[in-house]
Amino acid sequence: MRQVVLDTETTGLDPALGHRIIEIGCVELIDRRITPNRFHRYLNPEREIDRDALSVHGIDGHFLADKPKFCEIADEFLSFIQDSQVIIHNAAFDLSFINAELARLGPQFGRLEDHCSILDTLELARTLHPGQRNSLDALCKRYQIDNSRRELHGALLDAEILAAVYLAMTSGQLLLELEGEQNPLRPKLRKLRSRSNLLLARCPQEDLEAHLKWLELIDQESGGKCLWLGH
Image (tube, helix red, strand yellow):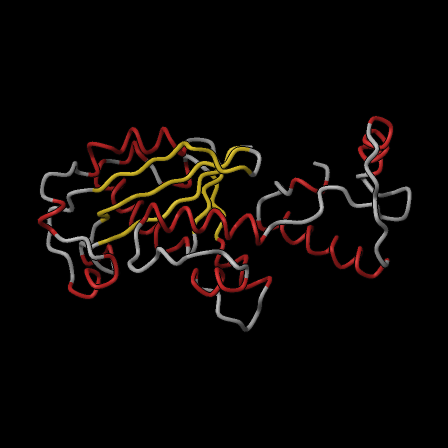
């Protein structure tokens, strides 16, 4: 299973006001393992950067003056994310900017959702932790992910941090021994028992049922791609 964790930095908050992407950072996951494969580009937005945005990411127009425009890297970017599941925190924000950039290039480019599936970790976090703060920094603290390098926002750094947060949010026991012959994992468990000396510790039934409900939630949010439900 291939997933891509994505983040962007922009000139402002609203693409409808002409704000543009200035940085794209992507981190590849293969079968829930972070790989060295990255996509990272700074972009010339062809416009000024809002002061408030500059205070967040620290990327100024002088630095971006000799960087490529989005149209010059669009094909490479779409090739990188093609047919993967793209993981974004607060996906609506990044999608609005990416789709605005694609729209400038013509209808043949479609939307990002035409090239990949989307998983919003903010929505997932709100489901798992209702009523709590679910910013990336808050999730780092909750899941004990080191974000000490994050003095300023940066697309690649934030994508790397989000990849670690996502794996922590969706982690669980790969092998669960649930009671009952209807458990879809039992055939796989039997095969593993027959070829290994792995010991499976029993948990209270109520804990196992709660864990299964959590996995079913992950499965729903990820479009049926939860690894531990035996799809």
